[in-house]
Length: 131
Image (cartoon, rainbow, N blue to C red; front, side, top):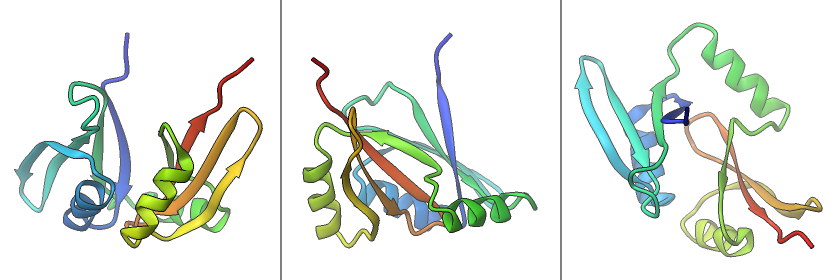
């Protein structure tokens, strides 16, 4: 068994698609119109056959209150692995991404948290080499 899809609830699929591709650097895997919405998935350019991230509309009545509660408490919706949090923080900041937590050393990992402009906080994480 392996993880094939993971999702993030977004308030606007087109805005999310632009942010996750043009700003973060993911690439589109699927963009299939389904009436008012679409089946949109993106993947890492480094692993195009890897896990797909679904940009899922947040229209279920529980979705927006759930997202708002996470943001209010400063809890990231999901986490992405990076090789170098400092470098990624600099790259994304230069692209206008707003970080709510700068790179922070938490012992075995370094993390930073940004606003994805679609109602979520997203964490990036670098695992430090273990002795």
